[in-house]
Amino acid sequence: MQQSAVPELAHSHTRPIHWVATATAVAGVVVLSSLLQPRPATAAQPGTGTGTPDDRPAATAPATTGIDFPLDCGPVDELVIHKASGDLDGDGRPETVAAVHCDAPMGTPPDGVYVLTQGPTQTHARVVATLVDPKDRTTVTSLTVTDGAVLATYLGYSSSDVPSCCPDLKDTAKWQWKDGVFVRSTPAGARSA
Image 1 (tube, rainbow, N blue to C red):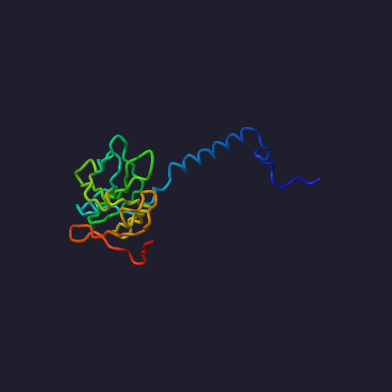
Image 2 (cartoon, rainbow, N blue to C red):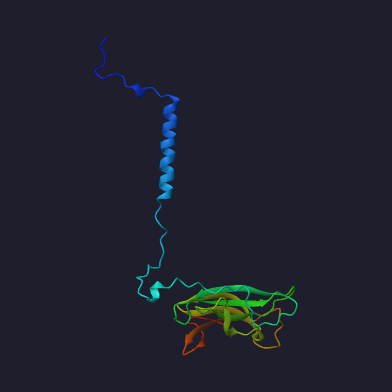
C-alpha cells in the first residue's frame, strides 16, 4: 500500500468545536451586515447649508385631527370621509383637502370640502377655504389632488324637490389656485347623470 503524498490534515474530521466556530463566524457576519446597512433612499436631496429652500426640512401635509371644521353637527361628531394632500398654491408646502360630514346615525348627511394649511410657524392646521358647502346637499364620492388641482366627484340634486334619499346628479368639479382664490371649473370629459 502506498502512502499519500499529502499528510493527513488535522481538520479533516469534524468535531463539535468546528461546528461552534462556524456558527459563531456566521452569526458575526450576520450581525456585522445588519449594522452596515445603507441608509434608506429618499427623494429629497440633502441641502448645501446655504440657507436655500433645499435646507428646510420636508413639510408634511396638515392632519385633519383636532380641526374645527365649519359644520354645525349638534351632539354628533364630525367625520372626515375623504382626504388628499398636495401643494395647491405653489409655496412648497402641502395642503390637505378634506371631505367632512356630521356622523349622523341615520341618512346620508351632506358633505363639506375644506382646504387646510399649516404655516411654517404654526403648530396646528386651520381651514382656509371651503370648496363645497354642506348647504349644497352634495355627497362626495372621490377626492384627489393632482398637479396642484383638487378634483372631486360627487352626487347631488337637480332641485329641492328631489328626496334626500335619491340624488339624481353625478358631477365632477376641479378647483385650481389662481390669483389668490380657488377657481372652480368642470374637468374635460366630465358628465352629469
